[in-house]
Every structure is written in C-alpha cells, then in structure tokens.
Image (tube, rainbow, N blue to C red; front, side):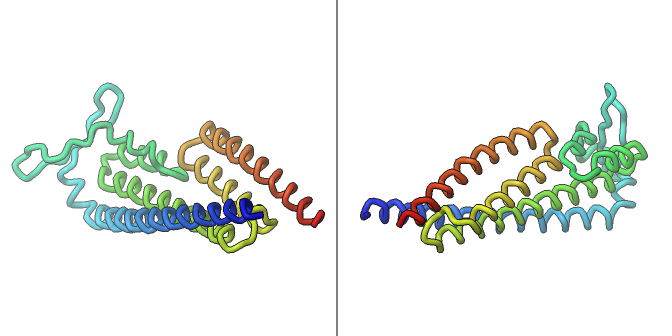
Length: 200
C-alpha cells in the first residue's frame, strides 16, 4: 500500500508542475495576444498613412510589399506578404489575399495580426482547460475519476478543433487519433480503477 501512495503522490506532484507550466504559458500567450491585438488596432488606425508608403508588386506570381520613406528609399520589405495569410484562421486567408490584391497592405497585415491574436486567445482558453484538468487530478484521490475523464475528453476534442482551424484537416486527424489513443488508455485505467474500488 505504501508503494501505491508514493505513486499517487508522484502523480500529484507531476500534475502540480504541469499546471504551473500551463499557467505560465497561458499568461505568456495572453500577453502576446494582447500585444498582437494592439498591433492590429494600430495598423487599422494608421492604414491610410501606411498604405501611402506601401507598394505591392507581383513577382513570380507572388505578391511582394515594400514600405518606402519620404525620400522613396525602401524601409521595410515584406517578401511574399500573402504568405502571412497562411497563418490565419476562419477565412482570414481569403480576406488578406483580397486586401493585398487591392494594395491595402496595412489592412492585410492588420487582419493577419488580428487572426494570430484570435488563435492565441483560443490557445489560452485550451491551456486554462488543461490547467483545470491537472488541478482536478491533483485534488482527487485517483487520476481515474469519471469527472476527470469527461474533462479530458472535452479538452482533447477542443484541441483537435483548434488544430483543424489553425493548421488544417490532416494535422487535426493526426492529433485526433493520437488523443483518442491516449483517451482509450486512460479510459481503460478508469475501468480498472472502478473494478478495484468495487472489489474493495
């Protein structure tokens, strides 16, 4: 029985460490999301002035953008600016390509920045859910509890959905299969724990 108690104590210690790491990451990504949100607001607020200094050229089938100063010297070169759209979510790609095609570089960059802020905000929500799961495990007598299993299933499903919208279907399928395999292993542990509790 002593060995069992040591293992449970180690699991709780690991959960506490994982919860602290998730908390640190959630705070870090929340700060980055806020900075990106402020950046997108600045881009939208100054779009007229920024677009006056921007020029979009199609080179080898890709849109390239350059910002110039008053003397006409290149200040910033955003090579393949439409490539930034690949990191967008929820239709941001189409909006950005449309804006870039019209020479609205500041707006396109604003949409990209806003899209990245939204992605990070969703990621922060997922991290908070993960923290909640670790806290539940830490406070329970056993990591194999029905409420914990339901919470884990919800977190796994939410992460898979986030991966689908952020990266694509292929990555979401891989993540989903991986999480489903992990859930099946945990569910088996839950069944064994339930049988052991009923035996006692």
